[in-house]
Image (tube, rainbow, N blue to C red; front, side, top):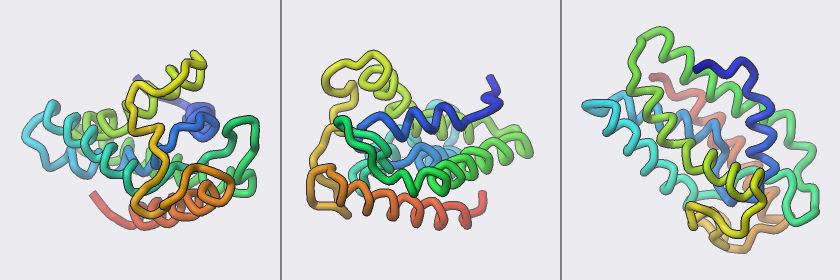
Length: 168
């Protein structure tokens, strides 16, 4: 499967009020861990585990939550950072044909994709992965709000820039 244009998926991810690290950061970390695993299953599980760890470090960049628009000035840089991360993973896979990269990345983004559908598209209460509803993180010790969301957007861009420089 090839996603020709990831921007609509990323916009959806940024509009669902799940309190999670940005999708591109998840994918890059999952792929980095997955490449060193023995097989695709281990890579998937390593990516999934990395998702949990990253989500407890920082909230994701939220553009819309509870009828409020947040961080519209971060829209373009956030989309660019996420597309760059996803593109790095895909290009490394195309170069190496190492499916562990994709399995690690998929394991890392799966919880957000599931909760995007469940909470965002189906408009269900709560989350399939309960940690997406938490009220604080390691870096932000306050519930999601305009102030916390802004700091999360800044942290996610910093994390993305750091991950961008990490080579496979």
